[in-house]
Image 1 (cartoon, helix red, strand yellow):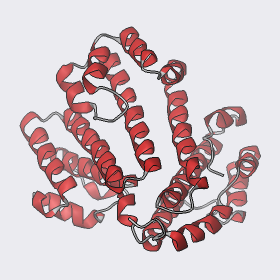
Image 2: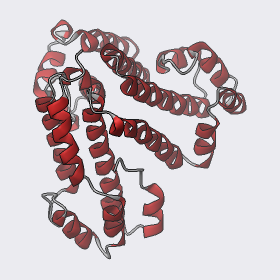
Image 3: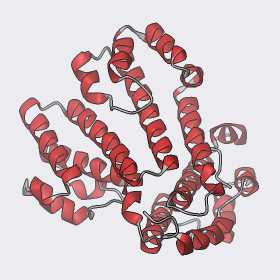
Length: 322
């Protein structure tokens, strides 16, 4: 890959970064005396929203527009599929469950994604798995077999979640960008820790963990699973010995504290792209920055509707890219 292929796109993204919300912008929204006032302030900052809007749909649309911009501006945007392919796997889960439970899957499909929602629904409904990209087709076929033969939706979900993570890692590795590889290895690690902790709490066995834990460069999968099978104390001891004690401290506080710690860690990794002029990572960083901004806005607007205290909202805020 030539390092200068994305130079124009990176220059354009640097300009767009100036429109990202800052910490002080979010603080203004948090300090708003009502949901109506928060929405009004957000509208002033460029979001197409009013008090009668479905804020979730507005934020979804904003993220979709960001993704469309990134892939249309980058010559090598294909490698950025790693950032949204999880939604394709999520859509496969929704479609398979709808077949078993008899509901309409359309309202549960999400974007942005690689395979268009209607196309995926048509292919999955016809069980034409070979018509999907290789990284989706084989996983969809296997998941269909699992849910058809075992009727175990949880095991099917675990398999698809793992397939999604390993696909993300593979797509990032194909590009060879160090920042992207670091990002997705750490993303996978965070997901594996969360999955293992839940498995410990619910008494899952080796078969489940073998299915639910993804391979990544930061852990030994076998040692990780064996530690989880030993219970919470042994698992935390293993993580601490692997220089992952910060994850233990976060998860011992609460599930929300763990999620925040992981999100902040991902942002810190992507901030390295600020020092990069060439390559694809600055474009990826902008998408992650926008995704984080939108996550913070969801927290604020939901909290304002529920009249959650400002201090609690601040505790839940993620670290921003800017």
